Image 1 (cartoon, rainbow, N blue to C red):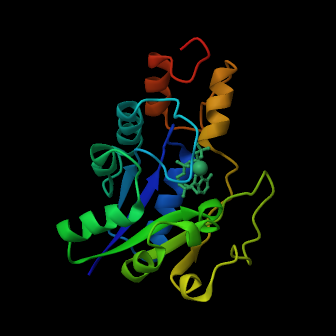
Image 2: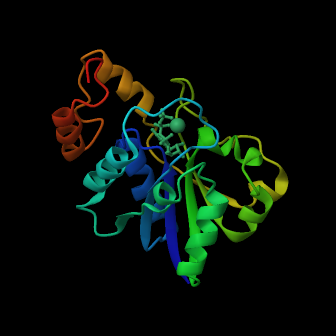
Length: 203
Ligand code: ATP
Ligand code: MG
């Protein structure tokens, strides 16, 4: 079985928190590759994204193109509408019947797991990798998992990573205020979003 990591997100924009989470998960779980999947309509998020789907996809490509084991898939953007992980896994399992998929999720989203579309079936088909993420600026306690019902908890593998208090929201806010996102996003992404004037008040 090939172990493949899936990293879903809005990636508006992609930042080093996403990349470190993917790299550490790859190492810890022996993943062969990690596939980054920008979503079309995130089911549990209500705000309108700042960049277009094409721009979010392009930034994910720029962020990952120098990594031999990272790929970017546009299947959720092509499918459009609300992106449910269940549908994505269904489609990917048909393309790669021999893959064992591991979905990488930050602790903020692990908490919502019970609310996900068709979660019981999803949890039978894939494993989840839970990576630590600071909560409201406070470091997450690495000994504590967000509370989950027992059958779901068993499907989550905890992978430690340095706690990076970085979010796309905070990056958008900085850029809108005319501040820098250098070192929070890869240089290639910074060059792209600067050239396009993304997330600026006047952009
Ligand atoms: P936004 O602020 O727009 O919600 P975000 O930074 O949370 O953006 P998403 O695209 O929502 O990024 O997240 C995609 C996935 O990456 C989620 O599973 C999220 O928990 C995880 N993630 C994002 N940032 C970090 C981080 N700093 N450390 C660990 N995991 C992260
Ligand atoms: Mg988020």
